[in-house]
Length: 292
Ligand SMILES: [Zn+2]
Image (cartoon, rainbow, N blue to C red; front, side):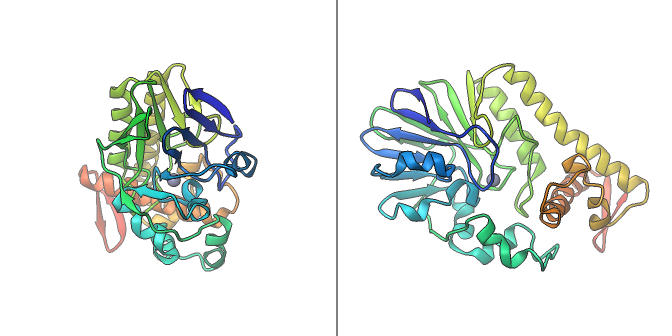
């Protein structure tokens, strides 16, 4: 727990531990939580709080798993993410569990990520201003990681809460509604905002130094993956499951559980190939990709 600004406290234990995230607690006329999956040690600080409002960056359970513990709170979320917080099946489908089946982990996945269905009560949209009393912040649509992924700009304090755009952690776009062009545009949008500080949803949270360079390096990581995937296709590997064996988006080494990260790799490779197809660099015939 670390006070950031007047009324605003960061709940972070400083490490990238799933299924938890860094959250903001705003203690104001309305007590507001920005994302709601703090590490259990940080959750202790919430136990006596009367949370009236929860603002979720997106519908992944490592950002909203405690929503159900605050039934009195109003939960706001981008409408494109509403379905997956209502239904576990929708959640699994959106992760590609039925496109790249992994029968072994599918029945275990929702428990492992501490999924609890809790419908949202209202919507978030780009440009929306949220006021809790003294504190005001603006919703900044930052899609790509998922279709309705949002950041939050605190103009008075000079920072953006970036959720799953984490410069210390490699970019992830592993939902069927993720999109590489959207992700690149969201990075560019953050660059344009020229914030003094970014607060990420995982790891050390506070990013202040060399933001311009680090955002560029983060973008280049995505472009470099795409080059490697294109080379695979050019060298005669045409099927996504075979391309994914290379683990290009995980630097050649899948974290455990391997089958889950292999599925994420399949979806991320698909996202790059869809972009390469739009760019006219590959064509798709019957699910196989060929260079032009
Ligand atoms: Zn996420």
